[in-house]
Image (cartoon, rainbow, N blue to C red; front, side, top):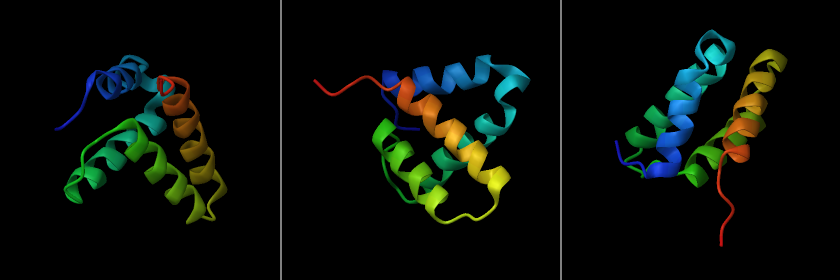
Length: 82
């Protein structure tokens, strides 16, 4: 998997949260697999854009909440561009 340290930190954060973020962790894993399946590099930007696209394409309020929560965590743990 092609990741830099920032993306690795996000994955480790989700993994260390255990059951507390189980649904979000599952979503993040699926997003990463889909990005890799598209032969794209896994970056914070790619994850964020993928999550936003998924949010725009779902009408399931429960799934939308999990996607939003995952997006908030990823954005919150992504360093600002300098």
